[in-house]
Amino acid sequence: MKSERSIPAVLSIAGSDSGGGAGIQADLKAFAACGVHGMTAITAITAQNTVGVDRIEPVSPEMIVAQIKAVADDIGVDAVKIGMLGDRPTIEAVCAGLDLLGEVPVVLDPVMVSESGAELLEREARDSLVSLILPRATVTTPNIPEARVITGIEGSQSELARGIVARGAGIAVVTGGHSDDYIDLFFDGRREEEIGGEIYPDRSAHGSGCTHSSALASFLALGFDPLEAARRARALASRAVAESLEAIGSGPGPVNALGLRSPDRE
Image 1 (tube, one colour):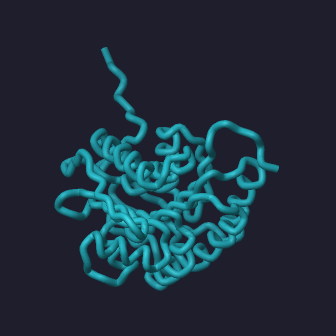
Image 2 (cartoon, helix red, strand yellow):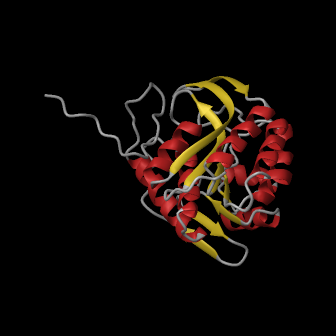
């Protein structure tokens, strides 16, 4: 039985980053920054840090479904963010889990490669992501390289966004971190809008994609329409990059969704 509550509850279905910079860990920080309750269904455990990914171990499909069912039965789910899926059995398990949730907004961050270059989605599973998960997404938030893989075209952001919607996604937000002007492109099948903001190319962006998609899911759960949710998510992710924790680790530090500050020392 779903409990009564006043705070929206958002579920992240994604992989765990032992370094705390991306994945589930970044999602929970973004949820907290947006003022929603974060829940998780972990799809894979990674051994990683700011330098790279050393090992990936998938969670069993049965356990993925069990995690989703447990939180849905007791707490309820107001929105879903989907991140790292890894392989086809995981994708199929997530589809089964989504069947338990009813009509809730779903934000898909189609994670394929880590910031350090590690492959996080098996190449043979990419078609499954597009055919099974993409049509269930309210909003899909690929970066430009991911959008090119999904669509199979080498087009502009506008062409990529339209191609993603043509393949079944409700709304595409093609993020601009790999472009010259860092503009996000929103397309809902009718209108196309550019979403800009402050840019910080000299700051670490490790976990920025996870943070952006989790914030977008949070703002949908809070009742904002998709365009406004995308604008707010862009603003939050931009601030997180601006205040990224460069002193964490010897590689690119994580983005800072919570605005952490070093304590003053006498």
